[in-house]
Amino acid sequence: MVPLIVSISGLRGIIGENLGPKEASEYGMAFGTYLKRKASDGKKPKIAIGRDSRPSGPMIAAAVSAGLMACGCDVVDLGIVTTPGGALMGKNLQCDGSVIITASHNPVPWNGIKLLRHDGIAFPADEVKVIQDSFRNGDFDQLDSLNVGNATADTRTHAFHVDTAMQLCDKTLIRSKRFKVVLDSVNGAGCIGTAELLHALGCELIHLNERPTGIFAHTPEPTAENLKDLGPQVLKYKAVVGFAQDPDADRLALIDEKGNYIGEEYTLALAAKYMFSKKKGKAAANLSTSRMIDDLAAQAGCEVIRTPVGEAHVANAMVANDCIVGGEGNGGIIDLRVIPVRDSFVGIVLVLQLLAETGKTISELVAEIPKYEMIKTKFECPAEKAAQKLEMVSRHFAMAEGGARVDNSDGIRIDLPDGWVHLRASNTEPIMRLIAEAKDVDTANEMIQQIQALMK
Image (cartoon, rainbow, N blue to C red; front, side):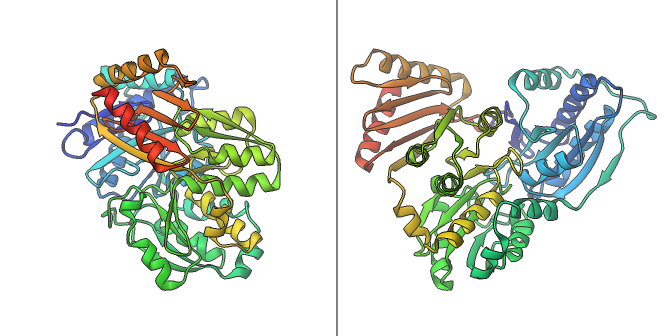
């Protein structure tokens, strides 16, 4: 049986196997106890709760809500919302935190509980540890009937998210282009608000998998192998772009006008290309993100700050350095003018603005960006064995000659003259991720094979 994953990213498990009402309510009580003890004014903390479209979502959301209210927190039920939308609404409602019920790109059997601060950023490691210790030890402050929390509902998230994202662009210009767009929302939380956004921008929308049933039409991670049906639809309808979201709509992958999957890495690259054309400023990206953003920054006389993998690391770096754009190579774009959370709405708006201003196609814009070949792979690895594998690889490159630069801030990243390779344990699954990038696919493959050989 796969163990329940309790990490800095939250809690994630398989419904009916290791995650159910008991675990969810206790995690809610742990979070509520932490917030209640932290409150200095004696007021009831207020928490916004949203969920993606998974069938298990209502059950898990209700259990978390019950746990929070048992410890004296008021909850606001947002219903089915995107992760960035839920974070944005929590901030708008002046909540003390937000809870998003989602397992992101994991298949339907999974679900998870993601905790966010009042500003939308994930809690730092030391605070997460306090919550986790409370959860594991059953250390909860349950209150009597006169002091438990209350529950209300708010259905305005999608409209507010759309309005906020549209402030990043020239709405009149985009509307004048009458762009034809194909969108695959994978029956996830992005179905409702994304359609509202594209219609508000005057786009002719061909919407695939548009009902938020949570019964995903294909494997939900927006990778090339999972989006084979999207390219032909872009060609069929002669659309300018195909957009693909993951179930909680914080990630965005792109298909060009020729029906080619150009991938998640180009989402950040194109957003950065647009932002750097408007003003000088810093960008932030994690260690697993393509060098494309470094090349674009160098061309514009700007700087890229590299962080460990994880949206919170990127968001904190952006806030600390007043970055104009940031994100991760998995299609997650962050713009602090909206919310310091990965947001597919931001990616859509910035890509459409770039198309409208330049008059170029997606493939023409991609051709202007220095090209790399990236290989992403993963393999099962229990958490207790991950450190051993990382140590073996780190020890090898520490002794090797040839100009390798080693970064151990998140797993191990080795920068070589011809490219880079990054090996790290996932925060959300019992796997290790291995990524390599180079100018040609053979070199990237050689780096992957070298790491795999070392681990054997």
